[in-house]
Amino acid sequence: MKTILLPTDFSDNSWNAIEYAINFFKDSNCNFYLLHVNKLSNIVTNDYPYIPTQDIIEDVYIKPAKTELKKILKKIATKFPNNKKHKFYTLTDYNFFIDSLRKHIEEKKVDMIVMGTKGASGLSKYIIGSNTGDVITKVKCTTLVVPENAKFKKIEEVAFPTDFSLTNDLQLLHPIAEILEENDSSLRIVNISKRSAKLNIEQQKNKELLEDYFFNYKHSFHFLTNKKVEAAIQCFVESRDIDIITMVAKNLNYFQQILFHTKVEEISYHTDVPFLVLHE
Image (cartoon, rainbow, N blue to C red; front, side):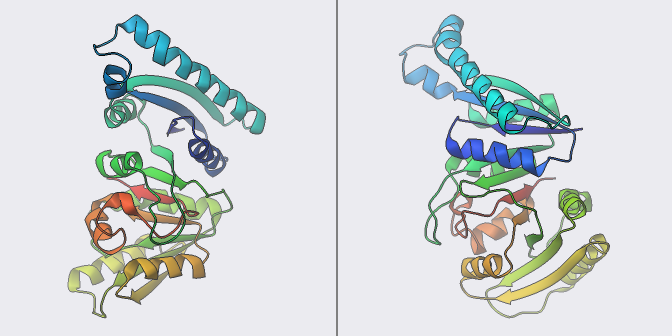
């Protein structure tokens, strides 16, 4: 039984992420937790100059959130009426967003967060808001980020950009193997460098480890050289018709430099392709 956390702010793109998650896990037994967090800072500063009482918080913030969450449950029941493998629960919280996620991940033993992100198309625009950027850098839980234009379709092509600096724990890659197995997908392991260079001894060893780990799955290695690495990724994603991009959180410094410009919040290659960030 998988436990999936679905943060929602009741926006269209958070509903899109919920839909994507239900389709993504359609063949798995899952407990889904819909979570709405009222920011503690909003409660303290926006409406009241003092810290409000528990009764005020309940009436002004918690009850309306519970009503909205019930509407989402009805929407799910209408759109996905017959999947007996899925159970849905609602959670409301008033806290700082990241603290709330960490608390529920620990309490509920969450396997994955699925959350939406909103942005404009085009290489120069951003597809990740600060909330999502904070989650993938500050919360140690595998996270599937669903851009606002992403619609679920059969996952046939999975891209895995890597600099071949791997963790010792290859079990970190298990979610990728699960996707490949459940969808009979192909894995494209992509190394992008700004100038042509041979792999060093450690990188070569890690490439061989990946070769062994994914031996039983359809996979291939791709080596790209391009001074504009984000353009190389864009081109690769489009030419291969990639359905999902996976990356290892430990390598986020690497990806910040070569893919995401200066901040991880500024991921900029596509607004249609979800990406899965793996945490140890």
